[in-house]
Length: 386
Image (cartoon, rainbow, N blue to C red; front, side):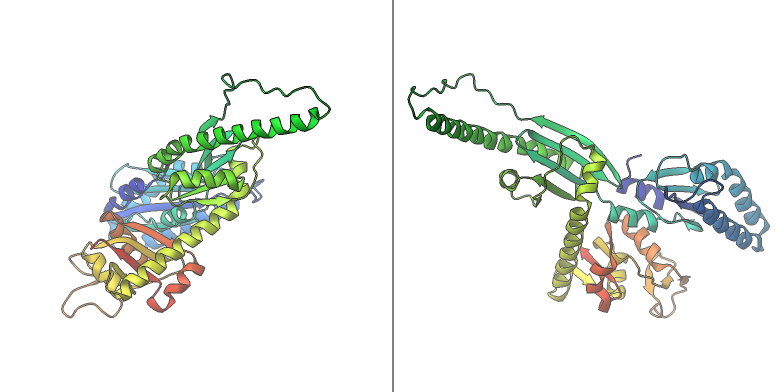
């Protein structure tokens, strides 16, 4: 399935006081699978630990409901761990109290774990979105333009245009017969090439709206223009004020979309790192100047509770603890207001992600390198709506 924020919001809407089972598997094709894949062993161990924990619950009805539901999920578990199944990252989410089972696959790792909570566990998916956010790759050459959509490890061609030159109305170029015929031929060739270049320039300008429309339609976070710098600069100029990245790399036209992505994967990673770093810098500047930004766990939670967060920024390695009040408000550990009967939240990061998605906010998981800029602020920040 196409994995988007809407799917995440559907998952966080799944709530069940009896429990929601969330299973994640990363099927690494490099692992030996002759007998039993490593990821199956890992998931089975996680499920065994879950069963042992549930078996110790005093409430018999809830205990039997969860254990019975896990038994019903066994056919889906077999699909999750099947070496022949598609997808590197495989996900299953299912509330205990009904037969609803949501599954999806991605071509990026999601870790391997089994979680039982009153809500769906989504942090691995959010992290996967950060590492594989939708991006466009435009191959620009003298032969034409080719667009590739790259998201969550998948790559496919979405548009192609061939540059054709109509020379029917050009007067035939012919020089006088003379000893200098070779020099005349060279001059005529240069003149012809200049005409070709002018028409190619016009073509690239005319094709720019086609590229721009797909940026919006496919919600590309980044757009990479690949090819001769003179050609990519022409397209970049035609797309302004849209921000693009030019890569001086020649890609053989015969390569399939996934092979193209492998050629530019390093550049894409750098682009995303710079984009996230710029966002962190923007949020910090806004926070310290009284603008639409906030840093630190306490202040971010306060504004998240008010629904004012537009983009939530979290360190990928961050672990936070706190409490949740009866009104659903979240508080850092040790900062619950006096008299508020808060429930302990050992995984406050997951709760923050849920709250952000429920309010329609975006969530950006920052790499350790980028999040270092927030080391003095708990690894948490947010861009605000107002």
